[in-house]
Image (cartoon, rainbow, N blue to C red):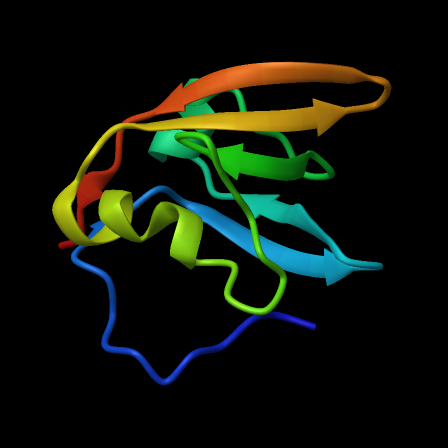
Length: 95
């Protein structure tokens, strides 16, 4: 079940698709050649926070809005298996 909003398209892209599972925000897909792939995000990663702002399942894009609207660098905290990682993602302008 993908996440859709009625907001205008973002000006910047990081290149992931999200999914929700039991209150967790999960990376469903990482698109090839995107900032998310370059940063090392992988499908199945659980997104905990971006720049210290926890992901809210009610409004998952809130934590990354500054990145996707203004191109600000995002520091993701993710959980992969039993390990927590920090990954830096630099959004790119949409074509």
